[in-house]
Image (cartoon, rainbow, N blue to C red; front, side, top):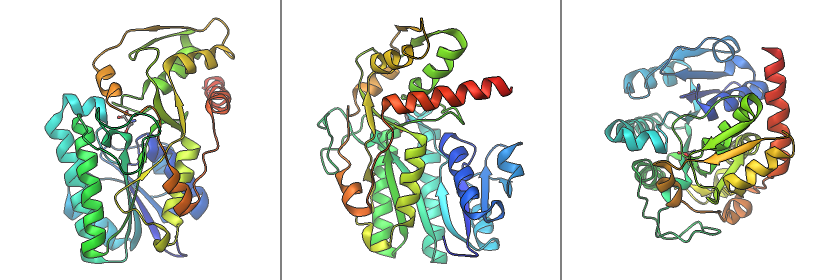
Length: 320
Ligand code: AKB
C-alpha cells in the first residue's frame, strides 16, 4: 500500500477480517484502514480506526465509501461459508456472487483499485484427486459454497483479462485463530475443539476421526494474504485463485496434540451433515505455484499452532 492510500475491508467482523484489520492497522495506522460490516460493531474494529455499517449488496453505498475515501485496496470478506450455505442456498449464492460482481464492476469503472477476494478448497469436489491436490485439476464442487467460489474464481480471471482489474485471490484451507470464531464452516471444529478443551476438557466432533482436511493457522493465512497483495503485479500469474496448503490433519491428530497439553482431554465423534461436505474436499493441497510465484512458505505446523492457540486462549480466559 502506498503512502496516503486507504484500504477498505468489507465483512471485517468475521474470522479473517478480525485478524486482517488488526494487522493492517498495525502496519499502516488505524485511520488508513476502513473496516465495515453488515452488523454494527463495538470494541476494537470501531475504536482503532474508521468503521461503517455497510451491506456489501448495496452497490451505491460501497461505491460511495470507495470514492469518498480514495480507497486503493479492497478486501471483500463478506460471505456465507459451506455449512450455512447448504441451509441457505439462495442467500449464499446472492451474497457470495453479487457482492463480488458489485466490487469487480466498481474496480473496472473507477480503475486503479486492487481487490482481494477469498476462494476456498471448496472449489474442489469428489472427483478431484484428494492428496496434494494440484492447482489445475478436475473441479466439480458438490456444495453451494464451492459452486459459488468456483464461479467467482472464473469471474475474477475474466475481469482481469477483459478489463485489467487487479484482482488477487487465495483458495484458503480451514482457518484456525484465537481472536475470532469462524461461523458456519465445515472446518470450524478445528477452532471449537481448542475452546472446548479448555472450558470442558472434552469435545464432541461433528466429523469422523479420520477425516483429513487442509488447514492453516491464521498468522500464516494473514501473511499469505498480504504477501500476495504486496507482490508486484507481474509475479501474480494466476488471476483465478492460488492453492494454499498449510497443515493437513484429522480430528484424531488434533485431539492427540491437544491432549499433550490438556491432560485428560477426551473426544468423541458424532458426524452430521458436514461429514459429506468434508468428504468432498481434498486431504491436502499442493501450493507450489504460490511458492514459485510470490515466495510463499508456511511456518506453523500442528504442534506449534497448538502451543500458540492454547497460550492465547488461556491468556484471554485469565483477563476476562
Ligand atoms: C468452510 O469450512 O466452509 C471454510 C472453507 C474451507 O472455506 N472454512
